[in-house]
Length: 508
Ligand code: BES
Ligand code: MN
Ligand code: ZN
Image 1 (cartoon, rainbow, N blue to C red):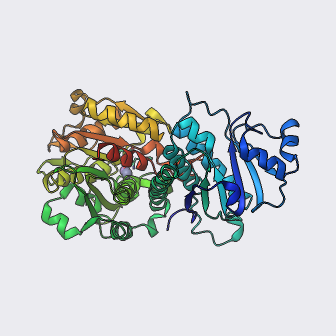
Image 2: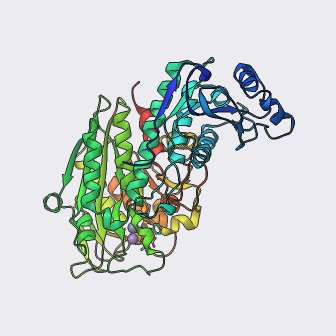
Image 3: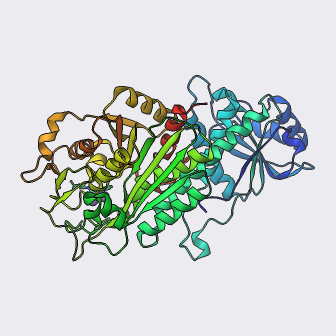
């Protein structure tokens, strides 16, 4: 199972009546001796807290973690965690999640064990007990994520594992709201970590067959129907575009379809994720430098599979289908050759100019299937589609191509709360001339100029009139270092935004 084993629990009891290895009291800047709990801790530490405050060791500054010498309490150790200014006017869930992400790693490094934690300044700053505990749960779960399955030496793993964390206030925050937020945050945090695990796992251990097995486990644990289309099914359906990418590989392709229906609209929201478990480029072979990062080329599939898992666990009143066309893109005797013409499921013909532009080929049939077989309404696709995307927007904002202003506005408002920031890219029809082919309806590449846009225009040709947004996550598929909720390796982005978008559209 993904990520840490830590569970986030809640309690309506006062922290001093509970017990555990470590009590963590969160304070904001300047709060060092305020309130009932801190005065009691000052007494239990025989005035130690006041000393730490007066000598400047305890200020409440963001990131500060001060251990108190406390005797006769229900805890082996007590720590005060500084959350910084926490002004409601400019505090955000994003700041809160990063705070808890960093805190979780500090507590793990300090071998904090079973933790009881107060989060009052965060609840006040976000003006919501449920949002506060949700941010805490997500931050604590995401921050502890690590992918160390394949290290066999102890020295390469963190020394300690953190136990369960109980969020307690004993103050004004209603316990039911705290519990609701912690459950929601745990489900979302775990889904993002699942997505990270799927993408971090090396391609020899995350073949299309294994992705399909994982998807089946997720479906079986929730109220999700799953269909795995085999090569023969894809052939019967006429998915010549998707199949053209599978030709060079010895791994059987798997076209994964997961359906969740709990009321909701007749036409499902379709989440379509690029599932290239490894992208060598195929006949148009990539240069070797950095090619190992192409294990992340199924990140789109990973996000839609884990997002629908969370949507089902949250029991949202909605109708969603997640579609992940999975295959390797390999060179091989049978591999597609530049100039080959293939036919997508909707009948459109494609000249494959470059076999390394394979993502759009699998998405074409993913989207055609969503429309024709699943009668999709809104279509959101997620793909590590173009290197050009990281040239345009770097590793901060996801490029989003969208054919409906209203849909983009909704996605942007979701993104601003999830922190998975997006930026709208153009899709003028002007660019279509670059993907015209001499011999087929479409060419799968559009030359050097505006590479991310011509890729989006190609996909749009299969979307037609459906409301649609395309997330090109090439720039954000992996993080370079640990910071806040971000952990080196697969980012899991934009799993949370997919969940929150669907949640916002669900009946309550
Ligand atoms: N998976 C790659 C895009 C990619 C590259 C994602 C680097 C993340 C990091 C995609 O399949 C690809 O190879 N795209 C080509 C398209 C080109 C041949 C038109 C690219 O970006 O070079
Ligand atoms: Mn490629
Ligand atoms: Zn690719």
